[in-house]
Length: 396
Ligand code: NIG
Image (cartoon, rainbow, N blue to C red; front, side, top):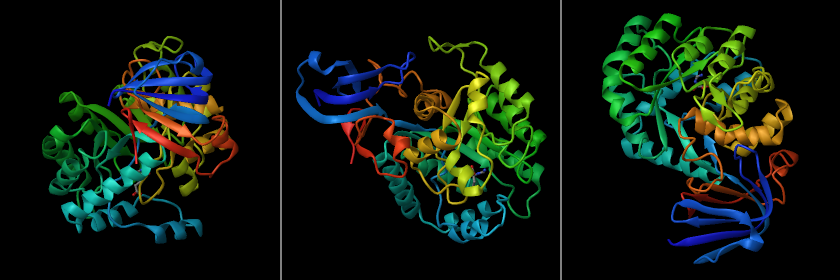
């Protein structure tokens, strides 16, 4: 591969700790790493030169929350919701049935196609979850098939209590034999802590079982109403709590407290529990948007993610999520871009590798067909992705 120079960059949004934005810039890639960043006029020689003709370069998106391992779709449920029905998570069972009927080849093909679609829109690192298996053999099949396709795999056996099952017995199955069966394929354990899904005690049992195995955790929390999800995520030191639509002041304080040992200006110390906001899901379920502005103002680290899934957010377009966060959540463009890159990387525990354009990091770069990053929100809904480099290679 040798070296590749990307030059004639109008705006290079590095998302480094200082928030540096370089104009008339260039980036030198060696193999899969960023080797040099600076003014185009000072750029070193390279084996290959890509002239970006005055375009903008950002870090690739780090999408830290998605559910790509599924069959079928739920357009009818969506139409009914737009006609006034509220979202109540029961549709997870519909997707579970549709997914069970797929062969390994069919399911693998669907997940790979969804991953490729996200990459084509700038997502260079993608997390996804199991959670449409809901029985031991299916959950472990989904983990085994999904792990090689995505960058981070999360076990969400505790997504819904299957029809007819006893919630406590199912929780024991998730926290015991299921976790045992998937452990070698996964990076995180997650649980949907919500009325109608898993209660506080059941959430504790799953998080504790993960901790006992030294597995990192996440929580789906406070999506459909106030609840204990946020506080449990903080108590267990989870990397993130996701959704966070219905927060009490005490939830925001608990999250802020978890960031007390993190120095934002040097990005050193111990990161707290990231509050992951999912604006595409909030729009598609007509929930109040997560209070990203209040969370940031309170000192909480936030991430933006797509939550791509067939029920509540059938999109993996992170450009759209960033635009929505700016237009509807009162984030500045720089804050939204940081949340969708470095914030996602913190939520996945990989911020030393990806999430910003810095020397030594993996060369994950998103080229926008625009002279400035502001166009992401200024021209919402437009297809602005020009090209994508993942680990130094031009994708697609
Ligand atoms: O993150 N909240 C739970 N899980 C998904 C929705 C899953 C579905 O409805 O299929 C979410 O929104």
